[in-house]
Length: 393
Ligand SMILES: NC(=O)c1ccc[n+]([C@@H]2O[C@H](COP(=O)([O-])OP(=O)(O)OC[C@H]3O[C@@H](n4cnc5c(N)ncnc54)[C@H](O)[C@@H]3O)[C@@H](O)[C@H]2O)c1
Image (cartoon, rainbow, N blue to C red; front, top):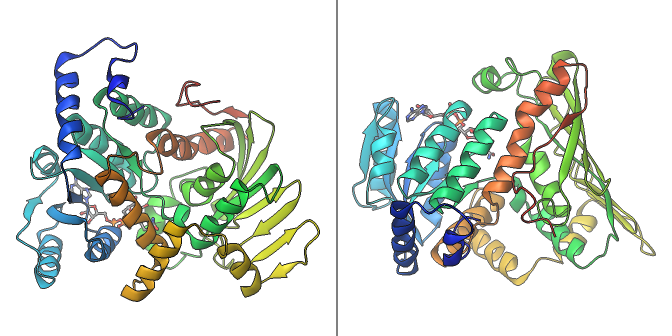
């Protein structure tokens, strides 16, 4: 487990003295921090949005930027200057991100580049002693997923995936209700990324065109894995996937305890935006899309704003506070704001991020496994257990 306990460093492994020494030093250094210094790699659409969002995170400061384009870097630098932030280090070019990762000014390397580069950048950043936040998906192949898991374990750094849908206010209410047992046993969940992006060619070119399966599974799957306590009391064991015309993909996943998940991906039809967010339990049912709905045994069926209000009434104190702050600040998107504040807050307090490297790897490996399965007509494919049984209780 990355950095859960100082003793975990000696946990039945061959000791690498330099890594142990550096881990001990960084653990002590972490305890002294009052600010997380971010090096941001990739200033495209998402990276620039991230840079703007962090104006609202008082315990973090962006100290370094890397991108291929000097114009983009200049735009980003001006944006930071406009909000009175001190000069930042600029790294321009194909391999300059490596210098950003090596900078002693940076605590957290935040990666917003294209998918193919995520894992290799994350591995290098951790090897330089940095914590890492990866945009979705964290990696594109099972082998890359193992790379980030092994490196996080060897270096004792945090490697999280910034899966913002895990901070959707509807989902955060559902999670509290699940913890209170209001749905009984969760038996089946459905999730998706359904977004008509036919006119957004930039995006489509690297998502749909080359991929036979579901290249973008984590918005749907991440929240479901949290609801089903995957990587803790249950785990994903197998999947079967089929892609149809327009590369609309449907995947069924099964858990060790025999529960099921339906995951869909569709960016090429006029179907209205949806992540489904559907859960079936032995004593309750909820869905967010297309119409928020809540049905609990013995209670009236609630739909629309009524269902949303009923679910969001279960938010814990921390979520309520962040939502109130976000509204006061007028942030564009509450789930991103909650995600950013929680990530930085936890790192500052020396706590593991909400989404572990095992979660990041598991939710992302579905990218390759769905392609393997779909390519072979829907053959059942095994899903690796990145925890090797260690968090299964
Ligand atoms: N969570 C969300 O809601 C959400 C939304 C949009 C995008 N994303 C994710 O964000 C990531 C980026 O997406 P995008 O739409 O911003 O892509 P983009 O193509 O607009 O931006 C990628 C950026 O990375 C830079 N880059 C590429 N290689 C580099 C290198 N070697 N060194 C430095 N910079 C390099 C490019 O110059 C470019 O500016 C993807 O993983 C995507 O899935 C997430």
